[in-house]
Amino acid sequence: MRRKLAAGNWKMNGTGDTLAELTALLKAQPDPACDVLICPPATLLNRAANAVRGSYLKIGAQDCHAAASGAHTGDISAEMLVESGASHVILGHSERRTDHGEADAQVRAKAEAAIKAGLTPIVCVGETLAQREAGQTLDVIAKQHAGSLPDSATCIVAYEPVWAIGTGKVATLDQIGEVHAHMRRLLADRYGDAGNAIPLLYGGSVKASNAAEIFGVPEVDGALVGGASLKAEDFAPIISALDRT
Ligand code: PGA
Image (cartoon, rainbow, N blue to C red; front, side, top):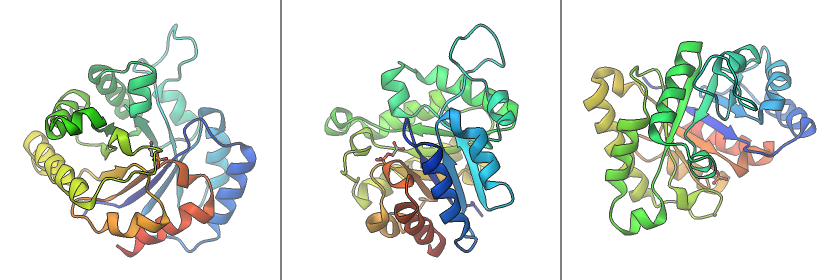
């Protein structure tokens, strides 16, 4: 049985006040059966870990360096993230691939480093609008899987069509279903039985009003939520929808 996961990706948003408010309100909810992860900016990780201690909430980071330590000004290693209380790390998000030129090999190296440090990597893949319109979606996803995923199956994969991130445009249920079925086949081919245990998340404009139908798509084990993860009034209904699935 794969565990379901609702993961909130705050990106470069949120303050200590946002964190205090969200964690207090989510902790007041009954414990869900699914996992719930909050990924705030690195500056808030330690505070977040203290705020959720003893509750069902877990804390994740948004990136790590592939090396354990060294002369890498401004970067943070997976070991450092563990020390600050993170259990997961988002890797290869399309914003990092675009803004920081991260290629598949680098994402893979980071995923290996994360696993070595004891973190669960959430590796993001997804096609651009131009790639979708050119009929390349499944090939792009296969290439990103082959290049970005670690050797071990102790990871989570998030399908985030680039054109659906922060745009309000959600992929159709058929589009999500097609890509998730494809990813499941890719994972089974690569990892065998262990591939079936890898949770697959959908991300891209997930909100309270569309979460339940997305969670009803086969092979969707949860969501990576951006904008709607900053406020409990938006995130809590998504968690509940996943819990009911
Ligand atoms: P969004 O972002 O929910 O704001 O579209 C999702 C993501 O980038 O992880």
